[in-house]
Image (cartoon, rainbow, N blue to C red; front, side):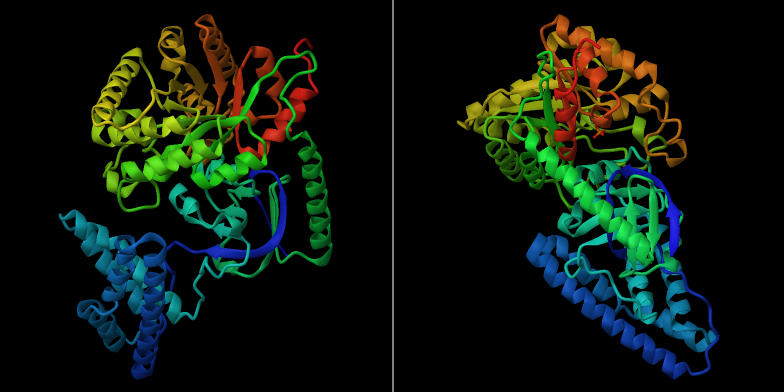
Length: 542
Ligand code: PEP
Ligand code: MG
């Protein structure tokens, strides 16, 4: 048994096979060889195997994401036929009498450095491709099997780290749990794990070289423990606890269709947070009253170009139609910081969390913003849609946004396209927005407090920095007082205020929030019935 502890991001217990995702460069040892011909033959076979894998990937990608996105696999295949690249590996094997893995690794480093130092952006980007294709070649030389998600049985994904764009591309049905060596509890990948309702443990000090795909593993999201190759007793215990968890979930199902009302009669809205159209299934399964936060930026991740107006319109329309009259709050693009998209060319920043992101990009690059707004105004005819703007810091920003929205609406009407002006609210997630919330409340229809960023900016703690997790305290009195201030200022103007950050699902605070007058909590779908239970069992007066 190999036992590790990490930080739990989502509670739950799972037993299943591991799928080890090795994204880091393949590590190799230099070995002296005696038979050059045999080494060159091994290289040839590995090249052929790599090309065959790439051809299959290309065909699969063409079907799933189209020719343009699939072209990258063709480029990789061509690299394996490039004479300069192959000559470099061959001559190293011949002259230095080294193993093919080592020659490929050195060539990988030399070529990628050469590309990275070029002035042309396109050529610079090839550095990552040369690393990728060389790592595939080395993997095949070592005889390691590639992780193929399409063939994968439901597994525990074990990786160094996962970015939001990698996570969204995974087939959710195939993921039993996440285990990562790095990552912070407040990152979007952790949020996605909660969203998918699967146990996730981060900061697990496992050496990926010491484990392999297919190994059995127990992931205990309650204790933060991860046990590879568990013995019979651990397996039996895990199975028993999985069964108990299932029974608790079944019990919660009896709350479906019931109101979120306290024993003394106060009702509050419990909505769901989602990141994609396919998440709406979880929303309905868990009987949410609406969608309080649709992180629309996930429509922009994991692709090579901007989603068109039509693509976005179809996505928003489908969500509002499926929700059949229940409120759907769609947040406009919140790209930047940890949610990076190559085609936005955002450039490297010293301090991305405080940088060019969210509404700042939308106000500067209005074509992108206007396209999204057109799609939203068009979709709003099909149901109960509201728009929400992220990262607001001032009244002036809201005024500028409203002006753009009016222009977009006028344009659509001029073109004879049916549209409707939805309710418009803002995320309150900067201390500045909190401090001017009295003025902002006069302008907008509602507030939704983003406690993830509000905690980051108030406590001056980068939410992505895993070393600061122990200092990141959303229970800090400063945050609680800010929430109270925002709720009071909203109510003075007859507006509602909710919480859509992760704190909204914090069971320790649910009763406090209800007593503070919070009108809505928007949480991961899996938390809805749990919150409903707490609310139905509490009284406002202690
Ligand atoms: C927040 O900041 O609390 C929030 C809900 O937005 P995100 O986590 O997507 O930044
Ligand atoms: Mg935020």
